[in-house]
Amino acid sequence: MLQSYLRDAWVSPTAAPDSAIEVRDAITGDVVCRVSNEGLDLAAAFDHARNTGGAYLRDLTFHQRADLLDAVAAAVRESRDDLYALSARAGATLTDARYDVDGGIRVLRDYAARARAELPDAAFLVEGEPERLAKGEDFLGLHLCTPSRGLVLQVNAFNFPVWAPLEKLAQALLAGMPSIVKPATPTAYLTERLVRVIANAGVLPPGALQMVAGSARPALGLLREQDVLSFTGSATTAGVLRTHPAVVARSIRLNAEADSVNAIMLAPDVQPGSRLFAAFVREVTTEMTVKAGQKCTAIRRVLIPREFESAALEAISSELSTVTIGNPASENVRMGAVVSLEQRDEVRRAAWTIAAAGRFVHGSPDKVEVIDADPRRGAFLDTILISADADAGAPHEVEPFGPVASVLAYRDTAHATELLARGRGSLAASLVSDDTPWMTGFLLDAAPWHGRLHILDSVTMTQTTGHGSPLPALKHGGPGRAGGGAEMGGMRGVVDLMQRTALQASPALLATLRS
Image (cartoon, rainbow, N blue to C red; front, side, top):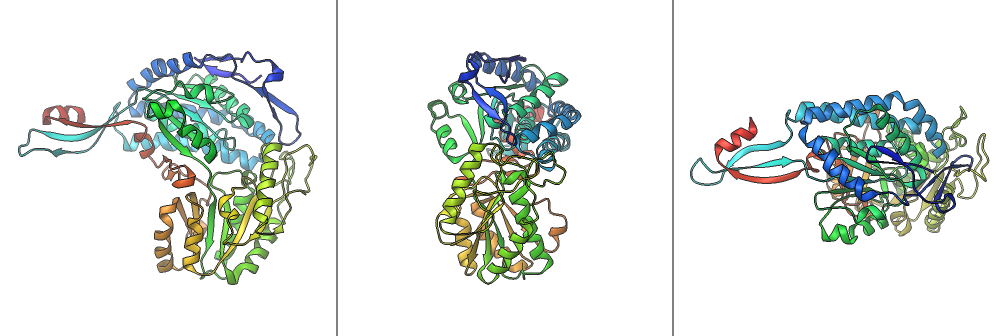
């Protein structure tokens, strides 16, 4: 039975094994663990976070909190080989595991360095210069950012069991807030291993980090006015959280990252056969195959000029035909499995729904050839490329959370703009063009519907970090369907967790705060 880490100790649930949720190996189908939170004292854990962890963190300066991030990063780095190996049970290749584990380490180090460079060696932040509020010089105002007297409850998705908790932890610790991590059940054993590594290292103060396995429902009613609920998952679950009585009655701050039917758009100036066209094809293929397409930022819609449709379908299909699928332990495997049989079946249904408005060009939802594994026991899927009617509803409404993308041919710029907006808000979109004037006008129309725009041209294609990679310096989140939330964005992500208070006072008092 998977343990939870509460009040600085590992505790087991009281549930009988047959009443807990079984979590199975994505490759073999063998049981990895069983998950329940029955019998856990979550109320005491929440109090411990606020009263012990929070009190300790609030007394530290930003620079001292940055030291904690570096210490956590060092501890995780020492155990990353173990985390890589365990990630294979969730279907991840070594490349996938590095994306998750090393990505989390980089976020911690990045935030530590930024905090030392951009924030004062103080426990609070004074923003901007004082504003004169009256005719004289003796009544001034400014904004003061102080740590909230609550905790951050992380409710995370299954696809990044290491990066997600570390990314949120980095911002919470710098803001002076303790974290309670609620991992998604299919990969909870990976987050448990991560927390165990950090706890064993003894690098965080008591109460700064806790983890509860199982359902999030019992925890929601324990949230208080100073707490933050940070969620990553489906739009449906985000809606449930927004309307939870405790969240509504106590005005709990909710940061949500939800469904996102992300797109890449090839502009009319990019000719098939060009270097930039080849970069576009690689970007699509990479986003379909890294983590078997299980990324919230992965490309789901591929928008191309109608006259290039055949060339794009042929080029992408050709690239996908080189992708080997199977057991991540095998040397020649490029793509592993999705996280579970249930997830595999959900992706299959989504692919069939989208294909009803078109046809399968490459791959099939119900057939896959694998290396060194049993396709009946493992959660394997082929890479699936669909040519769909761009004006149909399904390609813009259904998110196939796996190695599936739809090619949609647009008539003209106005049509392309309309199609992008039909995603109703996305985390990211890539725009591929060397026509700077055209791109400038187009991105201004696309920006309101996207949290991040990734511009790929003949200059950036040699240095790009990729469509699907959120970066600590930039905001991660999107409007509308994507949840309306925002994480990272450099120090903005830290300050957003703090309480900003308008302060009206004398010059002497403000000078004392700023000294």
